[in-house]
Length: 517
Image 1 (tube, rainbow, N blue to C red):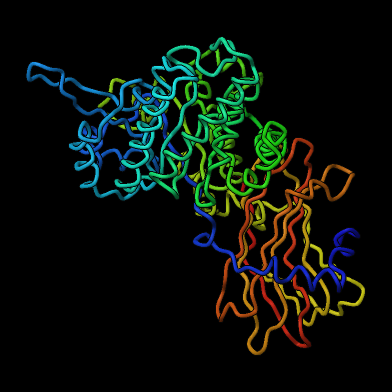
Image 2 (cartoon, one colour):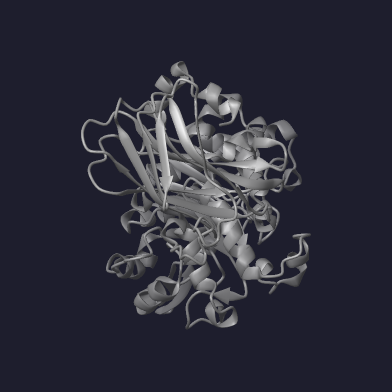
């Protein structure tokens, strides 16, 4: 056993760790990570109602952004369509009556898979004046309407896209006033906007394609400070980190996305909001499918890495993104769609297998491992298991015919194997474990950590450990984990261990498995 690990498992540390780390882990208990589809092919309420069953069957996602297109009186007894998404920043105040039909229709839908839908909003048409109170009264009323519709319809919240599609809006040069006044009015408008949407939907999810990311050097950052001024503790903000997510290609990039959100972005906020940001703002990594799949060749080249198999690349990065995300990752695309019936090409037809790849990446613990794919099966194993324990452990271990036991290990002992693996890959590790009959006070565990060639235990934050509770009950239980190798990884160390057993207490492991995902 590594000396660092031995020191960590000293008597004082063990007592503190047991309460924090003691878990019985299986696939059903893992937090469910979700994928949102925010593509150009996003549906209207009417399309969704007409095609819901087929869409849920075809699409490997958990939520959509919904476009609300209603009707308003055009005069002379005629009606004209009105797209709420593109009217948010209009000087004209939208009315609920324009969208009554869509509200009623959406509320009648019975969702099975699309559990996390959002109402789509964009800063359009961007012809308002920062210093005009009436303009901003209308803008805030429009966003309040969108938030209230989302709440009434049981949606998670609103998508806020701050990109300037219709003209410059966030830039300092859009007003003829002293900069100090511009900064002050932006914060004031952020407060008004926040009160409007949070008043309409106090426990909403505010999903922003780029929040502080991309908004550090313009009026938006002062607007954001204003939003935090009034944001209640019941709201959660999702930082989409759009451009950086589109170009992410390694586990390190996803670490950087979270480092930006958790630490680097704080410098742009008023210090009074640092804790609020930490508590209520989380990263939600982005994927630009057109780029990954080389449909958009310009963006594809921007990865600056060779992508021989786009679907393999997509799966690997989804595994990274979903593992590091607290809840969401999201897809953007302009050229494809996950369901039939739109003007956009059907992704599964263009790239057969893409749906299966996404579904498997979402649920890696459900992956089946056969003898052929099991790196720990006797047929594939070219290295040996070894038993090791701390000096005062006094445990007795056996290892025969794929059955591993540890008995009476007073401190820490484990069966360990050092398995050669590839860098920048993801591995599923699984083992079945059973406690002996009688009183059990020890803690069996499955542990995996990374080794660099000739340098020993490393990449400590990526290590994964799963404990089995002594109260887990009779019969065989499954411990499993996902671990990502780094760019310098040479070996994966796997331990089947026991901690703090009583005299005569036995734990048995069988069927250890490891598979590259």
